[in-house]
Length: 580
Image 1: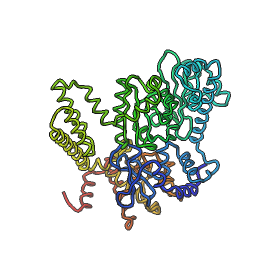
Image 2: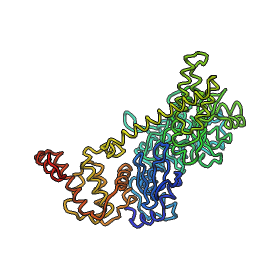
Image 3: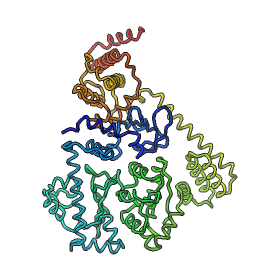
Image 4: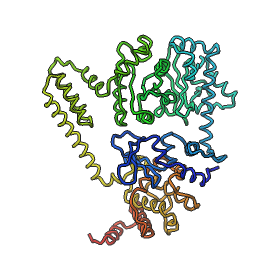
């Protein structure tokens, strides 16, 4: 059963898009009636994310995302349409209509219930003989009972079917277990437990749902950590271990570490803002997730080559989101867990207070690559450092760091400052030329940001966009003779948008972006919003839509080759008022 139209309209009326988006993005008024901020869906330094209070829509001019308040929650919270409606209904204090869940919504709810039951089963194994190896490992690592309970740690016994059989007794099917990544298919048929002989860490999202698992091997073997595969409810690049706990911290910053054990150890020592990525380097999606809760991150990665490389990458991602980054120097320990155990929590707290800002850290990393007693290497260090400083957007900071660099190398400060500014000018000019080049390619400008929605026939696509825009703004135009069927649109993405729009109009239903969010993909909805941003004169709407239909038919004939192209060319020239 579909969610009633009236309920959706009432929900949207009670969910102002500026209020909702402001919970995730810092918005400020820049020009006109619109609010602007840094896009939460892609990395950027200059705000291109626009929210219209009048139209109740959002649109990013950088990545193309767009829609209404429901689609925003779908994108930012990674929810299905019914789940996003339920999310906003709870926020607005509205009771969801009965029997409105979709098949996908029911499947997601079932998978979340299965994960929760699996987490409880893993936890219960710690008090069973089969969980003894995990208990021994917990004691060896000095993890307290309080932390075991706080994180919901558990044990996956060294058996092939313990979890499978326990979940089957609860009524779950083997296919449901497989879809959740809890079992694997055997070569000879049947299923067996995916996690065996591991200390289990439930992965819990910021809403408190168990969405997956991370298991640490208890003996020899690979991989050391095994994470749940991508499922309907779990995407490791968009989630962080322990963020559900860290978001409640009063520290004002997030500590980003590499491993789950490090996170548990940090929380146990009183540093309750620690999180870890799930078996990957920090992703842009994870950084944007962090930015919802803080604008300061302290990187506490392992003190080895891989950790240093991962730190550099994380700095590059977070600085694009205007997040203040500091980096710990774990001298005398390989990771935070070892540092706390050997030197104590108070020493670690002092380490946090004295952590380097990201620019000092990056300059030191460059310096350590060179022997400054060798003239050629000293020159290479200077060149690389100048390149880094030239990318600082703040002029005062560039000059301060340039003078520090000059003192370090025993060179005149005015020479180094001038060198940094020259390099800065070249970078700015290069970026300006790239922007100009893009702006002088009109066909490229007509293309949607998403590759999956590219236009093979831009001329026809422009007319197809026009029909979509007019029907959205003036649904009564649906009676216009000669409107083509969706399958005749040259761009399949536009055809799908047009088809959904046309279907709702013919049924007498609303065509707002919030109603269409349940029928279009995120990319298609973003394209629709971009189309609606373009100007259209409604005073002559019937003539305009007729012209668009004519253009589509002409382009269709050109593509098919089913007419005399020379005659068609002459016809087009006469229409434009000139002869060849």
